Image (tube, rainbow, N blue to C red):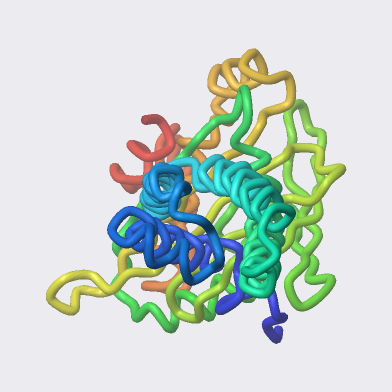
Length: 304
């Protein structure tokens, strides 16, 4: 399945990172050389102190974005700052005929950056939609004795996922970055959603989000990192989802043994089995009358 323009190089996350560094660079220039910068874009000397304040705001926004803690929120703060910049340039533009050319060019440049900030803020807000109020966060990892390339290639063919994700009924690929998922729900029901890839770095990262109308809104990522000492690959999965029924639904799911924290842990262990042995060991409930499997580790994973 081919990548499209939004996947990989031009993903919202990478665009946000670029805007973060741009914000820091601009902020440093405004703080350290406000007079020179103001003269270059056509502002008067009286705006020197204001430029320094705007520079501090730029640096704070850039550091917030690069910290990856609520990057969408920090990007929205940049949009607000861009509005202040445009207002300052607009006032100066109306009161300064001699520097109109430089002010016009600066206004056009800020407007262009504002459009990028706005687009990236909207995309990241959509991506993190499942992490809103009442969302459940899951993060698990496992080390598998296979190369990152092998693991990424197997996972990237989403139709392989039901082989080790026992809660999945099917995954149908519907486009270069989109797929339709059907999973087992409570009391014998099924839930469905359409998902799209948000970011993809071959052999390293796949992140996704569900589209509008999903039975269960969700988002997440899987990262493939080479383990130290050439000992295979660390597979890290992060997920956010909003359970049906909110916090009450999440509690009920745990009581019924369907908590996603446990499911993701089991899925990763079964992924390890498939990649290292070619199949998932399923010995639970065999004729010997054992209520547990022959694998103590498997029992601990299921019941922990």
